Amino acid sequence: MNCLLRRLGIFCLLLFPSLTSLAQGQLRYHNLSLQTGDLLFVGAKKDQLSGAINRVTQREAEASFDHLGILETDNGQLYILHASTEKGSVREPLDSLVNRARSKEKQLVVYRLTQEAQASIPRAIAVAKSLLGKPYNWTYVLNDSSLYCSDYVERAFRHAGLFQLEPMTFIDPATGQTDVYWVEFYKKLGMDVPEGQPGCNPNGLAASEYLMKIGELEVENQALNADFPTKPR
Image 1 (tube, rainbow, N blue to C red):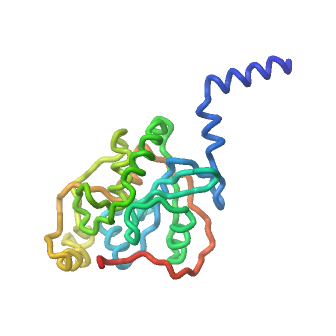
Image 2: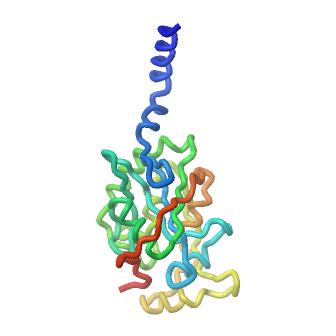
């Protein structure tokens, strides 16, 4: 009987190697088990750039985000690859982003690719790493020399078609007019509001049929000096 069980175990390992590697590749972080390819979404606030992004892009009451990045496990450590307003496209310890976000009492929510989309992760990580070092794209108009957060993630997974570019809108649904924040924002940049140009945003990516919500990170607030800029320098 024991011999039969051992044989069955070996058979399962040979038939389903990805299940074993998946389990081994997960790391416990606070209250969640995370793995390479998971997406971390940062909750939006009601004011400044965060609020302006959310006002014109929010789709669901329970999904209100202004930033996201791709998680990677490496030698027992967790990293996030993302396009940061502060640092541009970087790979940094997950703790760095989590501490900055929680110092502003921002929600942190993890989504995971559905089983059918898991195969796209290795290539997405490779693409994401090839984009490191590019500056942040403050205009949000797509180009190949600078990136914003959802643009960075969409490009990483573009080969798999998980996310779609859509016409951008800067119109506040509550007023039917271009949001005042964006009018002033682009005035300072010396350009017209890029209404209707192709783009993407965290709330749009979170709505993808290829993502499933894993849960919210439960992290104690930490009062740190690090913060996210709220306007172009």
